[in-house]
Image (tube, rainbow, N blue to C red; front, side, top):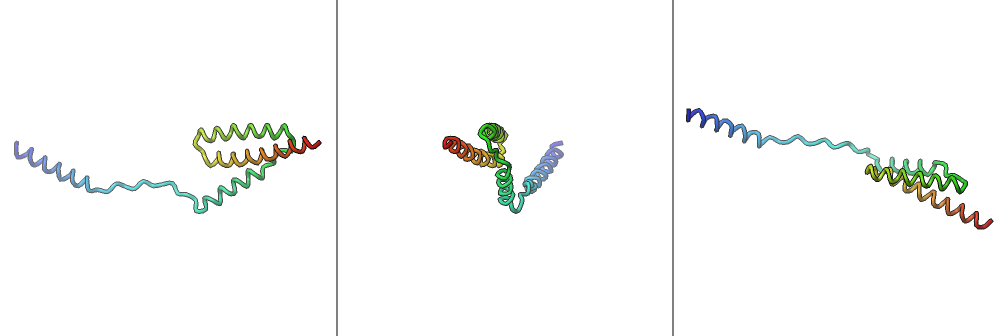
Length: 106
């Protein structure tokens, strides 16, 4: 019986050594688009091309909506969307300043 135990121990050790030498399979990473920067540029242009309201109230309303969406995107850790929304917010702020300046001139 002692001999059988020793044989089984050596067999287990050999299997263990064999398993230790096996290579782990590589994890597949999600493939990135070849032109990732170009697609983000398209998103930025699309957001800028969205109609920027012409009156003061609608600009303020759109600005508050964009800010809420940006906060939600950051909470969801969707930083690309947050970046696009930030740029939209900046465009709206420029429009708001422009409208306020025109209003003060009148």
